[in-house]
Length: 194
Length: 194
Image (tube, rainbow over the protein chains, first blue to last red):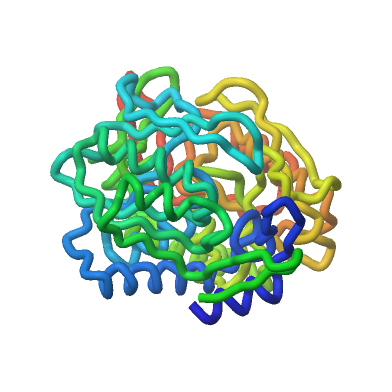
C-alpha cells in the first residue's frame, strides 16, 4: 500500500532493538483518514485472496482496534476486540489465551466472551503489527477454542526480520496471511516496501 | 440518537450496581456501522453547538477509541488515544493523569506524548461513557497540561444517575458537554432516552 509505505518512510522512526515507532500516525496518534483507507485495503486484499462469507473480525485491544474497525465497516460485520483485563460486565466463562508483550513487558491475557464468537462464525483476524506473531497466535487459538472458521489473518505492518509470519503459517498453513507494508532493517536503517 | 437508544433498550443489560453491559455492540463486540453513525452524530452535534476549528480529538484506550476514531474521520482530524501503559516507543516526558477504574478496579494512569498535543491545538474529548466523569476529568487535565484549547466533551452514553456531568462541568463550565443517549435506573430497570 503505497500511501502507507510513504508514511512509514516519512514519519516512522527506528528506535533500535527491532522497535519501530509509528506513534505519529498508527499508534497513540492516528491519521483517521489513512486508517479508513487501510481498512478498505485490507478488505480488498482479502477479497482478492478469495475470502468470502466473513461474519466477524477479531482483534486485540488497543492498537489493533482502529484498522480492524475500519475493515469491519467496509465488510459490514461486527468487530470483536479481545480484552486484556476482565471488565465486571464480562461473563465468567471466556475463551482465553496469553501473549508476551515486548513493548510493555510481561504476559498479556486475551479474553473473548463466548456470547459473540462461536462455531457458526467465519473470522478474519486483524492487528496492527505482525512481528513475533505471538498476539496473532493467541487470537488464532481463541478462534480455535470458539469452533469458528479462520478465514484470514491481516496486519498493517509486517516486520519481515521477525519470525511472526512463519509462526502464524505453522498454525494457519493455507492462509491468507496479509500485510500492507513490510519493514526490514539493513545496516541499522529502516527499509520499507509494500 | 434514536438508533442508539433503541439498541441500548434491545441489547443493553443492567447487571446491577449501576453497571450497564453494552458488550454486544459498544464494548468488546462493536457494531461497526452503528459506530460510524455515532461518530457522525457526535461531529454534527458539536457543529450544532458552534464548535469550529478542531485540530485533534483525544480519548482514552481502549473503549473510547471506536467512537472517537469515527468522529475524527468525519472531522478529518487526527485522533490521539491516551495510553494506560508506557510503550517503549513513548517519549519519557509525557502529560500524565490518573483515573480510578470502577469496572476493572484500581487507579489507571493516562499518558499522552507532548509530540502530538500542544498549545496550538483545539481539542475535542470523546469517550464511550460519562458516568463518574473521572476518566474525562483526567483527559481534561491532560489538555490543560498541554496548553491546548478544550472545545468540547462528548460521550456516547451518559449515566444521568452518576455525578459525571457535574464533575466535568465544574472544570469546563461553558461546555459543550454532549451525550447521545442517557441512561437512568428506575426501580432496578434501565430507562433510556436520547
